[in-house]
Every structure is written in structure tokens, then in C-alpha cells.
Length: 89
Image 1 (tube, rainbow, N blue to C red):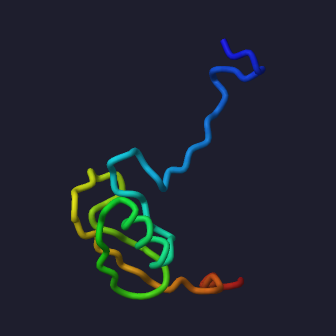
Image 2 (image 1 turned 30 degrees about the vertical axis):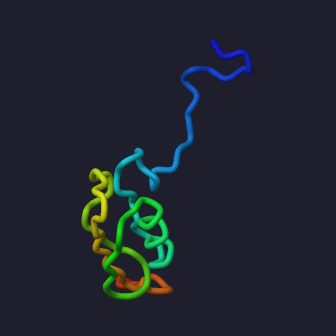
Image 3 (image 1 turned 180 degrees about the vertical axis):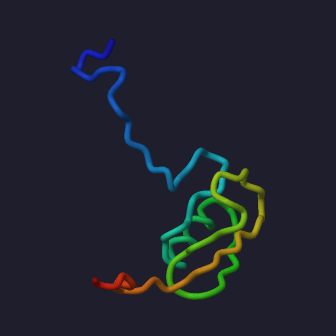
């Protein structure tokens, strides 16, 4: 039993983007620079298409890392303001 007042059922905060060791990280929402840095740290190469932020990647997040593998990143620019399509009565 913990002596610092914490209970075993207390939540633990972790970064999902990092994922388990030995797996491809979740790069969605990152800039190209951030995503490439994360891949290089893990020994992967990147092939980037588009500009803006990562919207999809292959291999998918959580896939096992392979040495010298290439991760294909698709980037898109996100709208600066939400598009309003609702009509008023």
C-alpha cells in the first residue's frame, strides 16, 4: 500500500503519442518537423506529402518498428476557423 496517500486506483498520466517502446508513434496533429524528429529518434525515415499537419501515416501508430523503415506521412492544412454550414430558421 502506498504511504504517500495515493491509492492504487488513482489514475496514471501517460503520453499516448509515444506509445509502447518498439512501436511507431502516433504522429497525427504534429507538424512535419515534429513528426520527422520523432521518427528519426526511433531510427525511421520519413516520406512527406502535403503541407500543414499530419492527418495520416503508414505504418499506423502502434505498429512494430522495423529498422530503416520508411513512414509515409500525409499532411494537410487545417482551416483557421470552423466552417459553419447550419442554416437559421
